Image 1 (tube, rainbow, N blue to C red):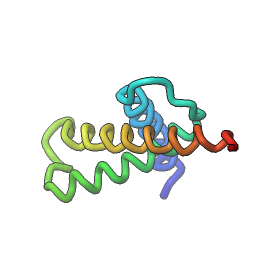
Image 2: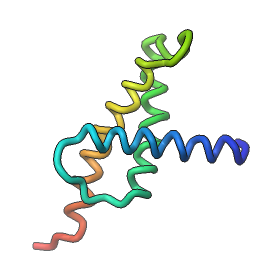
Image 3: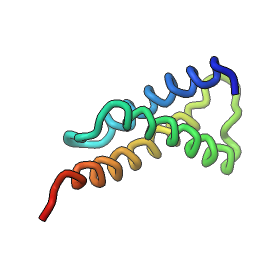
Image 4: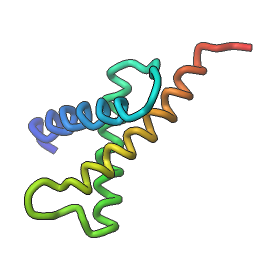
Length: 91
């Protein structure tokens, strides 16, 4: 993987993570770096799901792939926010 590929993954991951975070209702108490990591993971998983359904490569913008990525990011943001939010709470 080249430096350009890594930078592109971080930028796309940040965008996907932020979009996923916007979809989830309420406030998520997770740092921005974790949102970016979630976005990068969601981008890979969303692309994999789109490939399974045969919609990863289309003419123009791959809207279905983008929707898959954002949905996965929203699910992951919700899960990570729940786990990360409980981290500091001790009973």
